[in-house]
Amino acid sequence: MFNNKNQTILLTGCAGFIGSNFVPYFLDKYKEYNLVNLDLLTYAGDLANLKECESNPRYKFIKGDICNRELVEFIFNEYDVKGVIHFAAESHVDNSIKNPGVFVQTNVNGTFTLIDVARAYWMETPFKYKEEYKNCRFHHISTDEVYGTLNETDLFTESTPYAPNSPYSASKASSDMIVRSYQETYGLNTVITNCSNNYGPKQHDEKLIPTIIRKALSNQNIPIYGDGKNIRDWLYVLDHCKGIDVVYHTGITGETYNIGGRNERTNLQIVNTICEILDKKYPIKNNSKFKTQNSTLSSYKSLITFVEDRAGHDRRYAIDATKLENELGWKADENFDSGILLTIEWYLGKYEKVENK
Image (cartoon, rainbow, N blue to C red):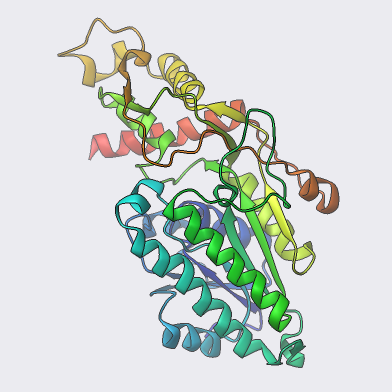
């Protein structure tokens, strides 16, 4: 239990990328909340991401599985949970192709367990909340990948039909439907947010932007799938956190809100931009990894290597965030040019520490 009378919100999966940016932001902004973070610490979870929160008396970490109903029920009872923001998910598309069962277990069954415990704890009967829990909300964090792929001009809106193309996106689409069903069937207060590609500090090393930075600095080939012309809409992670905040507090029950950065880039544009920035900030001539070999290279761009495209690789994603902007007043603070500079600075610091260990 917490030694205060604050309202407690259960967060899931917040040792991962987006959640570990959200926790310090939310703790700092809302002194009236206690936060319980339930995370199994699978490959993408790292408690080092939350070091700045460890000593905060309004924050509690619990290692555990969202599929463990007994544990989830214990947390609701022990901390009298009055809100859920559900980040936890297996999220690496490549891994979902190799091992889809894990994605179904965590993303589908885990979401069901969480929302069913919340319904039982907060509600007396369908459409009737217990008086002390009448304002409790379940916020489900999802992805634009549930919509499938786009042509060259359209944008994903909240009314775009679902057409997932990978085991990852199929599992997230399934979890969205479970959340929707609990609102429609039981009257549970739910909101869903579907975001575009996030980037920024604390992202797992295997993801595209950290991989580009890490490989470049290490004098290794930078792998780019296919022809590099796959397009994604990029959203700076702190802008996503602010969008989640706005929807959790002011979103309309039962609604879905798309959160996008309006920053469409091909993978080739991404890698070229990063290499150009690294060329200025950390030139090859100053990088000890290039002293013995490839010393004639003048740009990190020389390391770009095209590799076989992955299965089910959607060609283009792009989100229309008009609903969130117009109805709830959210707006991204960072464009891609400013956000990628912040991101590269953070990773330069991270990899420099690793290098000096």
